[in-house]
Image (cartoon, rainbow, N blue to C red; front, side):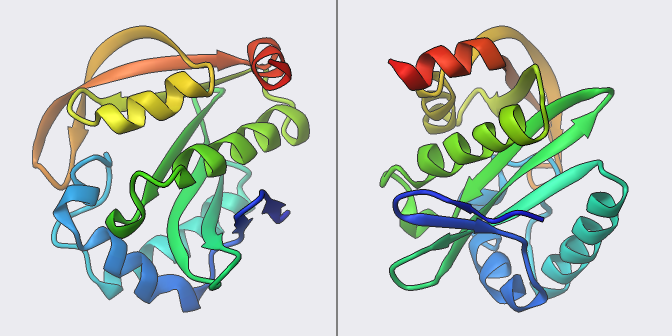
Length: 180
């Protein structure tokens, strides 16, 4: 599993020692409600089970999860991942609430996309964002994702179907966006 490095962040393989930071970040309903599979409340056992699943999916070549770690204080502030679903790559990400609005999501996802397009040879990457998560939509727009539709997607934390905006980015468009 490679490590990816940006100006302020290190994206690395999640470890069992990250479970407490992950549980703390996802225990906040304002974070969990924007994810499809995170339950609420979220606790240490949930984080450990997730980390075990990460190892299993990576071994099958179905998912590549990265802990998002700040370089300055080594603190894990979220996760991002690349998931193979029905022959297509989809990204997901979250940042702990104390770190919102500081550009960490954009920085981490940009590195994840470079990994997807250059290392994994993806030709396109998909992403979704719930209709009430405008910040996530803004991150994806900044990176060049284009809207392709809307669907209902289940949110475990909310316990209901939520409108989800579907977006896509091609390798060609990512290359042009980076050069601009």
